[in-house]
Image (tube, rainbow, N blue to C red):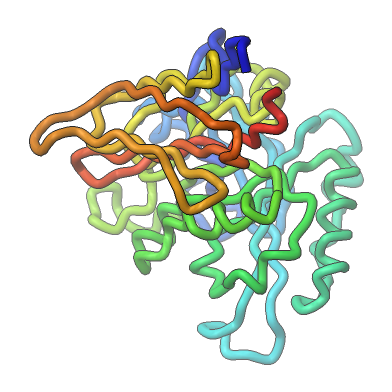
Length: 321
């Protein structure tokens, strides 16, 4: 890799985003207007409104400093079990072009697939992709799912590596192992950190489910087309605190710049990983790692002094040649 390959585009601006949000249209406590107001005050530029089982376009909220992405969340559940123990697939569907097939999308039925029929579930994901959606697999830990439940999923655009609502309510929001397992199965998919906010607690409550997980999308402008293009191309990273400022490969060396952190790790397909760790009481903001070409994929994971993580997408080296 002699050329300079930007894993996060050199051009454009970062836009702070919450890609999983619920409002009064389903089981959330805030209206879309209220969500926009409070999230903008926290520095967010984008919310994907993903109310349960209902497709709504809130484009009336859009302005030069805010963008509402169109989506919704569907579920496929185990039947005949106490809900507390029933496994479930929860999938966010993001509309890549809300101007197309509007009537059909509004009438799109919820999946009627059998939880145990993975072929049928994969067909549903494909059908929704054909309709213009990209599919994000949500909170596997909360869903009581393990490797056997997710290993045969196909056609996913991405998955949640962190879900703040799940973390607040049960300490099961951070799922890096599930993401790495999917990458090690050669699933070329992205990862996001989200809130999954319902806002049933006040903002000053310790278990408030807002403002915890966010995705930083880099794009030329805050327009629907540019943001969707960045999502489709993986030009973003996810975080619960620290920031990834730069990430590129030049002359077979990965270069990284971050906000002040204690640890910079590069996860690979195998057991080995690359790392730079600050001395006790100090922080670091950059690192470089020589790649040998046998890593399979690389994924950046950084950790700050508050124990908070940021994660890049997984990048397969074969796709970067």
